Length: 207
Image (cartoon, rainbow, N blue to C red; front, side):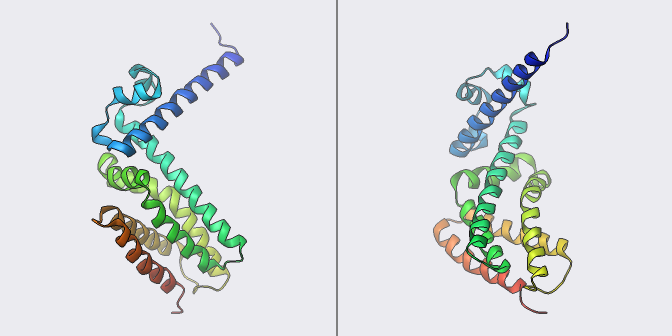
């Protein structure tokens, strides 16, 4: 029996709604309790669906976690873009945008949800390579675009953008992990912010 277009759209809408409910429920639970303390039955109950519906959408809990991580990374990147755009709207120079983006990333990493899902559980659940690929896919493009603006504006010496972007993203990720793992995150955030600002500013120094 052929399924007509309205039925297909309705099915697609239900599927998208179920998937979104599971991701939102899992995101909240993973952030509050950590990946290891949350079961699929608990997630399904919180999402208002059956476990069968969960396994219809995701191969397993780790697959669901990967989708949750993607949603967190998308939100963080959106937040960083908003901060950078606000600085640009106030007449900020390319280096100001880069510094603002770095500060915004450290602020985001202090968010309990980002800290737990993206920084602490992410590498252990997905493995370092897959976790890094997700982070790079969302953050690398933003860093590269800012570096290109800096070079075109004469703010930093002309140099290969790709290796510079990877080096900066690596520094940003390590700084965020340092804050996330610190016994005193507030002090670590303050100290790391100073160090990272100097690091980013040094990029603009003439060779």
